[in-house]
Image 1 (cartoon, rainbow, N blue to C red):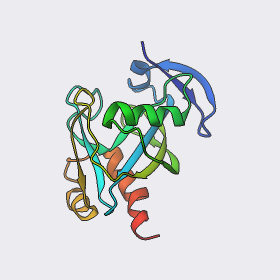
Image 2 (image 1 turned 180 degrees about the vertical axis):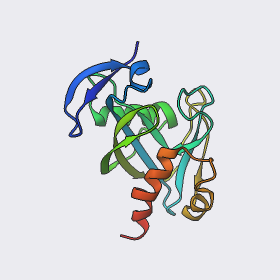
Image 3 (image 1 turned 30 degrees about the horizontal axis):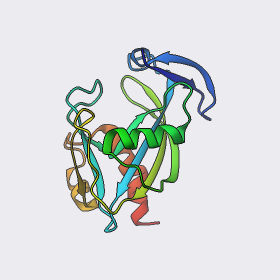
Length: 166
């Protein structure tokens, strides 16, 4: 069984709970990492979530996103998820922000990072159905149409869009 740390809004561990319990409407706050991968031209890589995922299957989402395991720190989780989902080993992440996100069934404290990557990520098809780079205008044109996860749309509007207009 997979366990996540239960944390407060400052990231302090208060306990642990199973993945099932965290995703069952308990709203136990647990940590998540997001890595936004940009190419040198500023296009953003997105992954299409596997149809087998328990949350938001088949929707386009952040390049890398995953839970921090119980006993694991945020940095190790970030590099583990990047390897597992996109085969990324050699990248330099920049911490952007962290924020609390509450969906209709869970509460997450999301640690958001970005990195420029000159190559083409190689998605693991057990984790990700497909992936590709999107330019920012293409993303804007598809917001609100059910193509992206609600969390990605929130992050795009409140975090990513600010990168273009500091």
